[in-house]
Length: 144
Image (cartoon, rainbow, N blue to C red):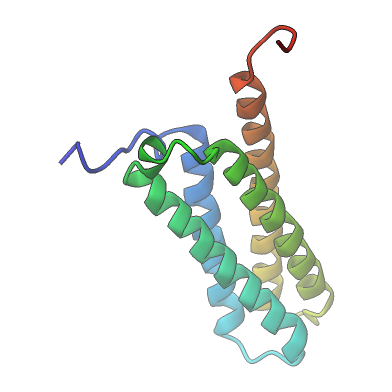
């Protein structure tokens, strides 16, 4: 069974951040989905972004859990994670800010926007860790 599953990524800092992002995004999606909101466009965007990014994070976790990055070495997975988190930060923070402005003191919608902002914060932390990992993987010295 250990030949199929590779839990090293899930136990690393990046993996723990991805699992936390996935849980928080699903909570934010459930909060918005369980209420009757008045502004269809802003919360519809927030629903779409949280669900889309959570699916993307789940696929990324699934690929890493089954060791695809070790088998497909032609893809720079550190840069792929960097791009995923950067785009996730942009979309989630935009949706969370709009949702926070439009919440009209509805507690569950405020909770959804706070969860979105927390997920965008975790994306920034993951971007920083991906950047540090990418910098460490570059060779030292002058180019030849």
